[in-house]
Length: 224
Length: 224
Image (cartoon, rainbow over all chains, first blue to last red; front, side, top):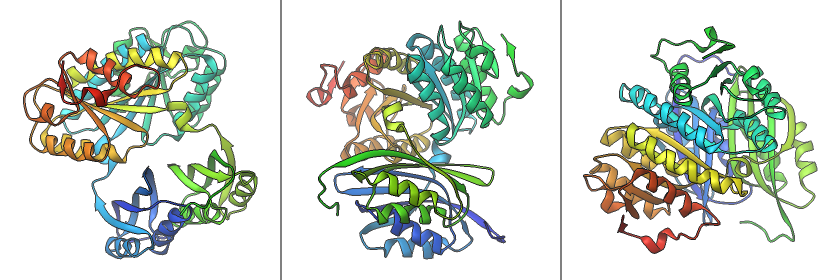
């Protein structure tokens, strides 16, 4: 449905407006009018105001009329262009499971991400310590709804059943999954199995990095 | 602008639709018609399809007509209710700065979050190893645009200048900030200064937890 355009530009816009039903509708109406393709959106509500953050693909020279249209929308207090969150926080790796192992994987991943980010990449490492088959399976499935996530690391001593089913589902949707070597069926469902949690974190960052010489797809189903 | 209602319910909805300009406008039009108050939104794009995730406040018994309206919107393939991301990942703590210190703060925070999450809370610990005054100041300001963030920990050996200005700005917007004890003016700008990075991580989680007996506001400007 995207019409062919000579030049499409990426813009990040932030709008501060009075909160309430219909505000998002009025803002996206302006974007639709200018054929802006929304590729990311976030909102935060404080007191009676809402701050909406859009990343859009927009035909060249369209950003000024879009900002004028947004600023002129009833209830809007401010509309401006800003640097994109994607450019600031970059790719995300999510580590979930038992606290002890999640901490060790995070250590490895953060150290490795630091080395890449110093050279200009942007890789974030996000974690949630969480136990229980149902809670973890739900969290694994919900990863698909989080923005900018490239890879999931499952860190624990025992994971299986519904969690393994959820891993197969997210892998079918294109997410890559590294599992620690552990009891249960999750390691069998993952792309890669690693015994040392610090190394698992390092490999996770290497797998999503633009510069590292590591291709997870060539490692599929291997165990270290 | 929110009309008084007898019962307002919280719902999480996910919609799969053909991607392209105007889709968000058509979806939010349905929500506006039913006076749904959008409190969270995320979208992810895969190939030519977009998956949109809304959390809405909705008058009792309105969720079925909303889902029917969304499912009947041109281009929509699927619309359904699911468990909310907020309920799954909960509150977020963001740790940013140098890799070595970020890793140690994350270790403390993840261990402490594990203890709280086992008892039913949901606290996530997100990190980005990042250096440089400008990059860090931009990332600090952008925290305000990330959903569900409750507290920021700045972990490094030297931070000042524009980063300290950014810390004052986000604190003025209600975000709480813990700084490691370090060179530069950032410790002076923070709510709380902690020397040991592991302890800083533990205190960060205690500060956002519903159950811990620790009130950051009573510690303001203290140093440990």
